[in-house]
Amino acid sequence: MMRITTRLSHSRAGIETRPLKQENKLKYPEDPIQFVLLPSNARKRYKGLLSLQSLMEQESERSSFNTYYPARNKSLGIIACGIAFNYLMENYPERKFPHPVLQLGQYPLPFSKVEKIVNECEQVLILEDGYPLVEEMLKGYLDKNSKIKGRLDGTIPRDGELNPDIVAKALGKEVKFGMKVPDIVANRPPELCAGCSHRDIYNALNETMKEFGKQKVFSDIGCYTLGALPPWNSINSCVDMGASITMAKGAADAGVHPSIAVIGDSTFTHSGMTALLDCVYENTPVTVIISDNGTTGMTGGQASHATGRLEEICIGLGVKPEHVRVLTPLPKYHDEMVNVLREEMLYEGVSVVIPRRECIQTLGRIKKEVKVKVEEVVK
Image (cartoon, helix red, strand yellow):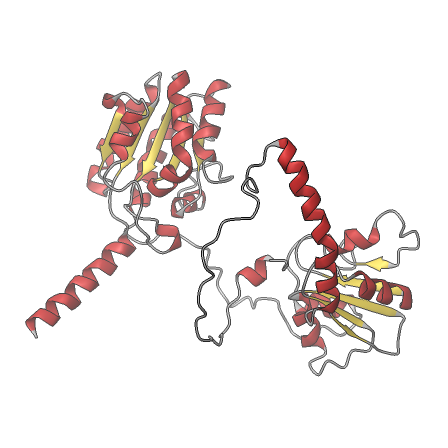
C-alpha cells in the first residue's frame, strides 16, 4: 500500500522497463458471491478483510521501503513519509543523519519500527506531505508531553506542500536552498488556448448576465473551468464532475433565476445526464450550456462519447426539442449567442444550449496529420 500525495502525483522520472510477462489466466472467484455486497455478505467480507490486516502489517515490517537509520543523538527522532524523505536527503545528501530516522514508504505503519523510534527519542518530528495522517495516528490524546512534532503543533506549516527549506527550518538548520520564486519570474496562471471556443461562449455569457446579475453560473470540471479566472470571471462554482447541473437545479429550487450550468460534452456524458434527467422530471427552470468541443480536451484529446449525438441525448432525456439550441461560438456570431442565451434564460423550464466548435488543439493536430499524409502521397 502506497500513499499518493499531490507532489508525487505531479512528478515524473525515467523508468527501466522489463520484458512483458504473460497475463494471468482468466478465472472466476472461488466464492461466487464475493462481489455481491448485500449486508449479510458485506459483514462476512469485512471480517475477511480484517483477517488480512496482520499479514499486511507483517509485509510492512519486512519491507525495504520502511527503513530505520540509527544515530547516537536521540534528542530528536525523524519519521519521514514518502516524498518527505527526499526533502530530508536534500538537507543531508550523504544520508549522514544526526538523529535516528525512520523512512516510511509502505503502509500500514510498521508498528515495531515506529514504537522503537518513539521510545528511543526525546521528541519525534513527523515529516509528511499533505494531511498529517501519521502524526494524528501517533499523537492522539495520549501525547501529554507534546513529544510528537509536525503540522499539528506548527513546527511545520499546517497548509501547503513540503520542500527542503521547510524541512531545514523545522530541523533548526540554515535555510539555504532558496525555494522562493524570484520576483523577476512572471506569474503565468493557466488560461484558455488562443482560439478556444470556450472563450467565445464566455464572452456571450458575460454579456447576457449583465441583465440578470452575478453568481448564478455553476460550472463543472474541464478546460472550461478556466473561465473562473480573469479576464472572464464567468463561473461561480466547480466542485466535482457532475455538480454543475445538480447545483444549478438546487439553486433554481431555492429561487435563483436564471440558474445556469456550464458543462463540457464529454463530462456531460460522464456525469451530467442523470442530473439533466432530474431537471426534466421536475421541469426545473435551468439553462444548461454544454460547451461542445468534440473531444475530451483536458486530458489529451480522447474521443468523446457525446460527439455527434448531444441533441438526441438531450431530447431523449425529455428536453423539449425547441429548447435544445445549437450555436457556433465565433466572435462574428456574438450577438446571436447573446440573444439565444437570453431567450433560454427567460424560459420557465429546462433548456439546453450547445455551443459547438472543435477543440483548437485537436484541430491543429488533425491538420498536421493530414498534411503529413498528403506529403507522403505526393512523394
